[in-house]
Image (cartoon, rainbow, N blue to C red; front, side, top):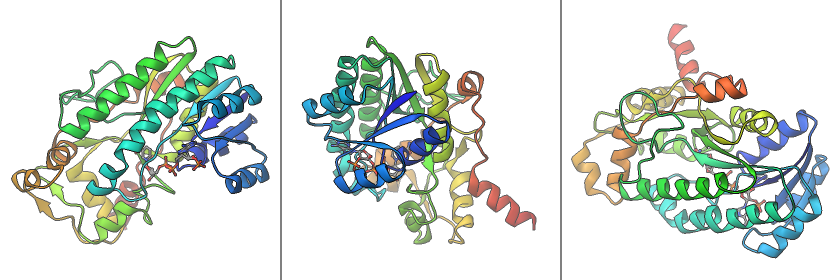
Length: 312
Ligand SMILES: NC(=O)c1ccc[n+]([C@@H]2O[C@H](COP(=O)([O-])OP(=O)(O)OC[C@H]3O[C@@H](n4cnc5c(N)ncnc54)[C@H](OP(=O)(O)O)[C@@H]3O)[C@@H](O)[C@H]2O)c1
């Protein structure tokens, strides 16, 4: 199939391109950069140069490419994962998902694209017992940043699923693997080494993980064989912060993460959001992805690593 990828040069875009090439697809990749366009071409990928905030140039790029499928992985997230950097990046990240995404969607519709997949978020299922599934309502009334993102996700998924395309929203778990915050050379690993990533309260918040290579495999499977709708793409091991964070620290040979009380966390800027992430977040179920996409995620790398280390 001919597949056009927006957000092709980011942490998730790169493995998606590799997986598409490995499956024999004809790939067109969007970038703003002449230099990245050249390296894409060297890999056998047709580059398309446009800025998604310029609707005419995106329209021209997709009309020229004439793809059957568009995969949208646009983000404007920072390389560092701190309260300050995330809130500084927030407005542009919101704008790229809303306005940039709308421009790509409109361009796809105008070019007669059949199927459109976009990146979405697996973490916002409303807190409750067990794992969230695709029908679980999102946390629209949670702490400020969580509620704002849950509303944004609701809006971008609504636009896609109500469009006349075969729309697929891929709600990814927390990415780890090369190029992500949680890679050993990534920003969170660095914070953990410096004991700057504490466990808040009981650490009961459950995080669902996803290796970016598995994200790419599931994305390409959904492009090839998914039915329209929402898919949670997460691994098999949703883990409470009190479990994954010490294991992550051990895998880095870092000291144990320091504890912080909920009361102290709430005194900090953005504290209500930290408390949500660390004590209330709900894990997600990959049952639908397994059933419909034959998704077979790997075990969470650092939990396997530390289990092996402890056994030896
Ligand atoms: N689920 C998760 O946990 C999750 C989800 C997303 C991201 N993240 C994290 O966020 C960090 C950075 O992620 P990332 O790889 O997505 O970011 P990134 O490396 O900044 O990639 C963003 C992508 O969007 C494209 N883009 C941005 N603005 C654009 C514009 N105006 N017009 C056209 N294209 C535009 C970029 O293309 P060009 O620059 O080539 O033009 C690039 O392909 C990583 O640590 C990642 O793990 C985590």
